[in-house]
Picture 1 (cartoon, rainbow, N blue to C red):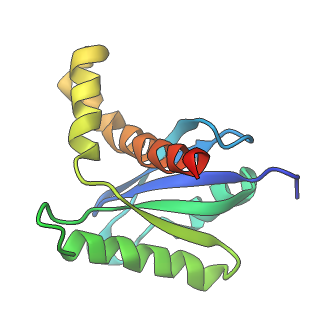
Picture 2 (cartoon, one colour):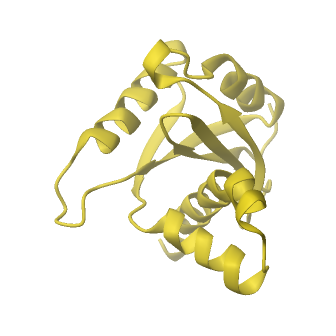
Length: 146
């Protein structure tokens, strides 16, 4: 185990989980991949997430917490918490953090449209990964202000 440990950001959906990881210093977030899942069939891609946790020596997992616009907790936020519970039940020393992610997907889409001029088909392929980057970067920025 190195002196520095990385954080991982997850944007959990019902079909995919966008994954991002921090640099060793905890300053920047980089997108890794989008893991395909099937919530309806109970396939949450947990094995792949743990492969990445081990590969990148991750100590903290930051999960986007999609509250409703009125600040209430709805089904997607409950699903995010259940995902975190699955991770924690498999490895108790893993630090799980939830961060408000309202509008991160729309922010990611705007970035891809306006700044990168990415086609609709390609946006669909990278949107979850970019949302995970935004979630993790917001967390990292909060940590540097503390």
